[in-house]
Length: 226
Ligand code: SAH
View (cartoon, rainbow, N blue to C red):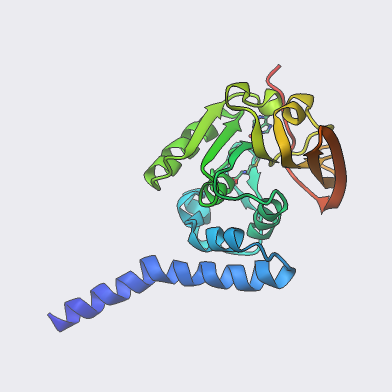
């Protein structure tokens, strides 16, 4: 009996809490160490079970400081970039957020821990379906996944307090600027595919749109449906 209890305890450490410890370590050494301070973002990264959103063969790399392949030639960003982009749009409770490029659903889950509603669009049908299923299994009821071309945004639910684009576009899609709320922020990698792009922060204030480059990044290309 004692033996069984011990085994059970060990199993718990290995499965659940060990991964939580990994997340806390990830946040401290990869994210806070690089200057991300936004509390809700840090808490969200400690909480979201990234290992349950990535493909099986890379589960053991889930909390490492590196991007990961998610099939169909797509890649998800390293946790630091997810944290940096989340902090940049200053999400808070009460917000409604649009994400373009659902991928694994990880960025959507991080946002959903902070804001009220997340709308996310994925162009690769299989990825969209998979993310919808995985996010559902994790219990996220405030995330809505649509399969389609994110270039046009999601008009029915606009305006958005924040927009996070996770694929590199040659230019900022005008419908996304339109769908940004007054006082809202958008973060988007802009530049040629397969080259270094700039992470651009767009802010809409008093009807004016201002943008500035934050840092060089590399993202998979923003593709179009036609
Ligand atoms: N945010 C994701 C990572 C996304 S990788 C995550 O946290 O896992 C970029 C994703 O953008 C890919 O899945 C790609 O298929 C998708 N994508 C590229 N162009 C798109 C478009 N026009 N509309 C919607 N999704 C797009």
